[in-house]
Image 1 (cartoon, rainbow, N blue to C red):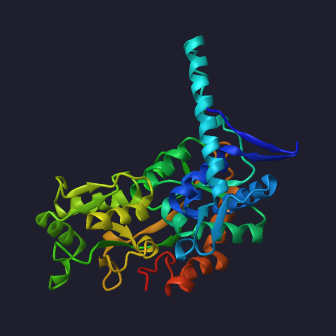
Image 2: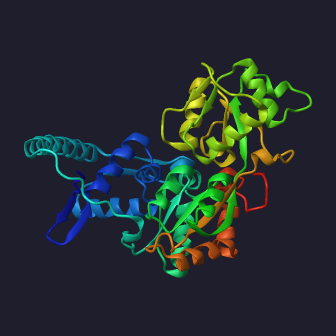
Image 3: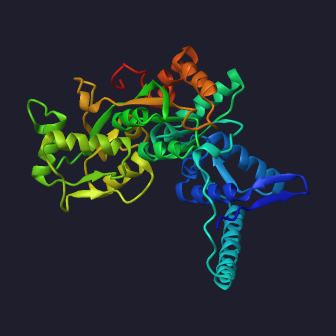
Length: 382
């Protein structure tokens, strides 16, 4: 049973308690409003607005905000914020205990009828299920803000790996999907779930690894191909981190292992235990002094320089195995009648035009001295 908490202030102000306390808990865990929003499945804009509204309505300072996010800033809960979150958890635990006692008294109840995608209620904004990389970078927030200012159409996103993003779409919950998993994208279209697909950005895959280089990849002359590098890592039994989550990154890694003729396994092949995408997996790889396949945007965002380096990417020579294009798929209204394909297509076309293209091409340059993403067909981050 799902209980939703609504906070009402002075009989007129309503705040989603579920969203607020979820954000507070994730801010405490990750030290970032952007990361907290991603984990909660809401946009940065919504998270920021909710926090401001809650602080104003409650007359309390909940979050100590520092400008910068991944570029050097972050956010921490104030002592008041921590106390409020602690009280909420105790309150929720007590409610859950009482609810369990009540349900045990009345016995099992018949399962309620499940809503099929065809009966899903439309939402008053465009909703996108997106792979994690552009969400974690903050690119989606910037694109959504610019689109709203120009077209007055609100776009929000749910963050998930590519496989999960398509599952969300098949459940009838979103109007479009942003992914980087060609096989899954082709399957989604073949099953009739997609109306059209548009490439919107790219961030090539790369092999990251410890500067100690236990597999001696950097000493190879001539340089290794990506499949040769994978074989050498396996031969050396050097630690390698896999996400193992059916995400676009994991699927591409699996393809490269197959092309290398290696079935990875054993103590050296480490499954990342978290759900924080490539950024979390990179932190785990640093701890384990391990290699991993990642995208270049995530590598730069992770501030891994010094401990880790990129051994193979598409900067010097193009490798099709490392090409990584993000595709926006508009959901087919014949499969999901609540979908809004016309407005979703408008957003897709806007991404292809000067405004959207300029944001993608310049995003990250002011902080990292180079853009984190490129336009489709422009390989490499230089």
